[in-house]
Image 1 (tube, protein in one colour):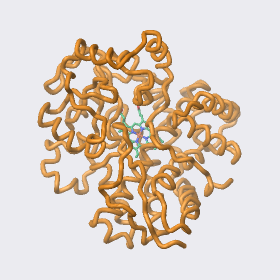
Image 2: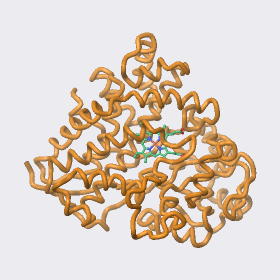
Image 3: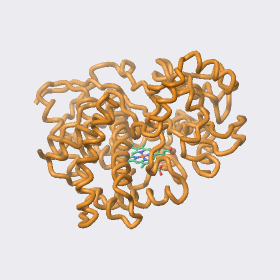
Image 4: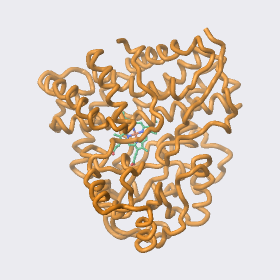
Length: 447
Ligand code: HEM
């Protein structure tokens, strides 16, 4: 199998982080205690009075126009708002630009350890937000020295990626995907294209033999889709990765797996595995969204449509504009208050969950007084986060290389691509975490 025909089934929903590990225990305790929705409502009123009647960050209205909801929240609550996540689970949404910077920059006050959350018992067993909230033994959930250890390994492993070579691999993957639908005269640019590129590109960084790459991709996708199969898929993945980890620890190559395994911080085999899978899952949903949102902008906004034929300048502009206006990781989960604190006008209690609304903070009138003027060339958006847990710079470079190549190759290969439905008919994934289209049907001259 070559890069060009690496096949990733298109997930219909795209969780942004590892599937839950720690909350298995929570799941059992819910089952034992017989969790009922009514238990949740009564407990909410008793323990989270500020959240009774709070705005829901789920449902059709929110997913259709989240920015209208953020605006109303800002008008009513200022920079920090009480909100209800799926199944009416309470959280604080940080929507002020300065406040987001502040929270993200104070790991002692707002930590990443979700095991300290005071509302685990309000999350039903199959709560859709368990994956981004679950504790994992990775860079995501650790703070201080332990975070520094994971972070050093991840930075060095991704920092060593040859971006030029990666772009070449992405081109071949993109070409293979386009070849598969070019003769049809129509395609879904999310399911048949954007969702298939990031994972396939990421897998090439591991330098596994083709047969193991195919098995690896199939199982990572099963984990990603949270299919009933996920646990079996994870066990198979561990079996694939472990012998390579041992071999490359002893005899490292230039690939990402070798760099994690042989890093001086001495990650254990389990840590190498968890960090590796976490990186692939982190990159999949967000890079898919970045590609998809940029294509949507280019194909539906007249400012971009007129310059499509000339291509490349518009691609860079579209990718940059999406980071401000429709950031892929729109609401970053999460931080947990380590002690009671006042933030904005709210009183946050120890163990409360704070969600960092990158999308709302980017539109904060304090930093964007004239929303219609657009951000210009400014790069001060929060799309990649802020503080010690911001998206590692090397990850940002990898994401940019994959997204830019994917969009550019498509527009070069099919210059007369046109949306098959009006922009208003495009539906968004029903998740608060990632801003990503469900599908983007297009038509073009078949070749
Ligand atoms: C469209 C592209 C991407 C966007 C918009 C994005 C955005 C973000 C944001 C906002 C955070 C901060 C989360 C927080 O503060 O809680 C973050 C963290 C992170 N991202 Fe990305 N990301 C992207 C691509 C990637 C890719 C391709 C990778 C891996 C190859 C990656 C790996 C990570 C990791 C490991 C973290 C956690 C860092 C830490 O906790 O120290 N991201 N990302």
